Image 1 (cartoon, helix red, strand yellow):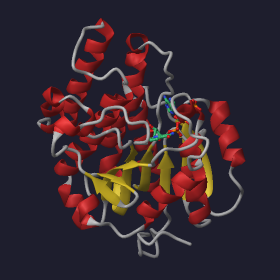
Image 2 (image 1 turned 90 degrees about the horizontal axis):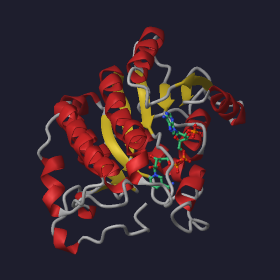
Image 3 (image 1 turned 45 degrees about the vertical axis):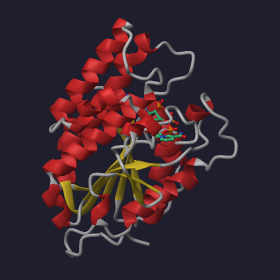
Image 4 (image 1 turned 180 degrees about the vertical axis):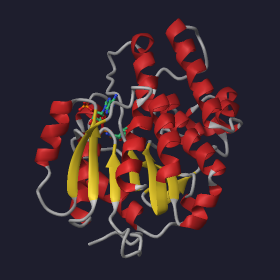
Length: 299
Ligand SMILES: NC(=O)c1ccc[n+]([C@@H]2O[C@H](COP(=O)([O-])OP(=O)(O)OC[C@H]3O[C@@H](n4cnc5c(N)ncnc54)[C@H](OP(=O)(O)O)[C@@H]3O)[C@@H](O)[C@H]2O)c1
C-alpha cells in the first residue's frame, strides 16, 4: 500500500523517508514499518550514529517493500543534519517523510550535571538542527514529525518557567532557553527546573515544533504536516530503566500509530501541535496548579 500523500506526477512519485535514531527501539520499528508500507521504488533512510549498528539494523528489516538505505547520522554532530540534508537534496531534490526520533538513553542513576551537555546536544539542539535543515526540503504533502512525549507539555513545568517556552518565537530562542536550562543544571543551582531532565527536554522539542510551524504556517496549504508526536509508553530498554513497561506496547505497535498519522490526510488542528492517538494535546495547561509532575504513565 502506498501513502495517500504520494505525489501524483508520473516523473516524481517515489517517496523518500528518513528516520533518526533508527538502530533500535521505536526508530527501528518506524523504519521497518515505512519499508513495509511503501513500495519498491521508494526509499527509507535508516540512520544512526554507529556504522555497525546501522548495518545490522538495515539487515534486520525484511527485504520487501521500499529500499532501505543505511546512512550515518549522529544528531549530536553540529554539521551532520545540514550535510545529510544537502546529500538528500542532491539525490532526490526533496524529502517526503522525516521522523526525528533519536534520543540519548539515560537512567535514574545518571547524574544530570554530568550528562546534560550530551543530552541537550542530542535531544534538543539535534532536534532544532534537524528542523532547520529538513523543513525547507519537505515536498508537498510531506510530513516532518518529531517524536516527543506527553511529558512535553507545560502542565509538567513550574509556572514560573512557562514563558520561556511560550514567548520564544524562533528556533534560536528555543535553543537559548535550552542552553540556560543546561547551564543551570550543570552548575547544580537550586531552581524551579524539574529533576527529571526528560521533562524540559521534551517541552523544548514540542516548543521548537510549535515555533517552526508558526514560521511555516503556509506549509499547511501545501498539504504538509509539521508536528510533534507522542508514541505513548513503549516497552523498550530505555523506558524499562524507569518504569515497569512489561505490558506496554511493543515498538512495532507504537510505530504503527505514528505511521497511521503520517499516512492519514492532514488535519489542520494537528499542525504545529503535539499529537497523541490522533488527538492534539494542549501545550499550555489550563490550570497549572493542577499539574502532576512526573506521572509515570504519561509516555
Ligand atoms: N520508550 C518509551 O516509552 C517512550 C515514551 C515516550 C516517548 N518516547 C520517545 O520515543 C523515541 C524513541 O525512544 P526509544 O525508547 O525507542 O529509545 P531507544 O530504544 O533508546 O533508541 C534510541 C535511538 O536513538 C539513537 N541515538 C542515540 N544517540 C544518538 C545520536 N547522537 N545520533 C543518532 N542517533 C542516536 C540510539 O542509537 P544507538 O543504538 O547508537 O544507541 C537509538 O537508535 C525518543 O524520542 C523517546 O523520547 C519513548
